[in-house]
Amino acid sequence: TQSTRPQRLLSAVQKNATRGDPRSVVQAIDQFCRHKEWAMNVGDEKGCILDSVVSEINPATVLELGTYCGYSTVRIASLLPPHAKLITLEFNPNYASIARQVIAWAGLEDKVQLVEGASGDWIPKMKEQFGVKTFDLVFLDHWKDRYLPDTKLIEECGLLTKGSVLLADNVICPGTPDYLEYIRSSPQYESQYFKSHLEYTKVEDGLEKSVFLG
Ligand SMILES: CCNc1ncnc2c1ncn2[C@@H]1O[C@H](/C=C/CNC(=O)c2cc(-c3ccc(F)cc3)cc(O)c2O)[C@@H](O)[C@H]1O
Ligand SMILES: [Mg+2]
Image (cartoon, rainbow, N blue to C red; front, side, top):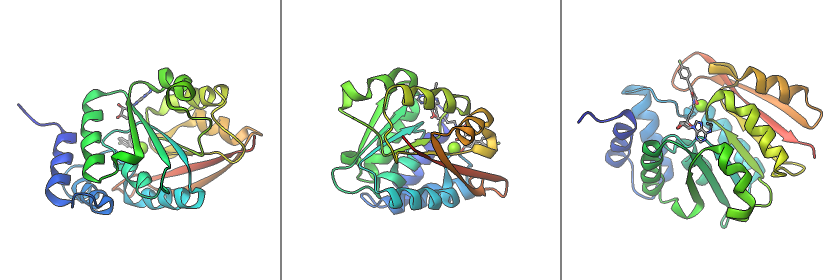
């Protein structure tokens, strides 16, 4: 049977990256996506912005919405302090399976909890199921029309505290107009746009960083 693109991406990691070396996993995926087959990872250019935001926050708890193949999961988890936890939600079982293997190849299983399921179902269960009080960082990279409803759900579930950061991918391309309008006009957030490019292309895209003011 024909392999899928995520399966070919995983094969590229297993072929070209060193087990236990997250940077080599990130590099193998970027090489594959730049020279073989494009895939919707946050990529190397926006990935550097992601890295700088993570390093600045030094988060103890991170929520990622939309694991896909685990590229940004590996980038974030590789920068976390000991005992920090990253919970990543992925509702496509095929993508979840690939992501688990990518995360394992990077040797980051201990820092990552991949939860197979929909954000709308799992966000309300974060406290009871995972003992999470609040998230220091939320990385939004799932369906673009779900950024706003899920942000409101995260607020309603009391999962943000003063200083919590929302970092959203693709606010220009494909675009998340309702989310941008809401977050930039809300007095509860201080937002900043990091201009960049759509992964592996020259098309404009960027990340929106929003600090919850409590
Ligand atoms: C139902 C909402 N809840 C969800 N809960 C858990 N996982 C979810 C959810 N939604 C989607 N997912 C998963 O997140 C991933 C979806 C990501 C959607 N991303 C994009 O569409 C995207 C698309 C592009 C893009 C840009 C330009 C193009 F020409 C073509 C594509 C670039 C990106 O960086 C993107 O992130 C998948 O793995 C999907 O199974
Ligand atoms: Mg994206």
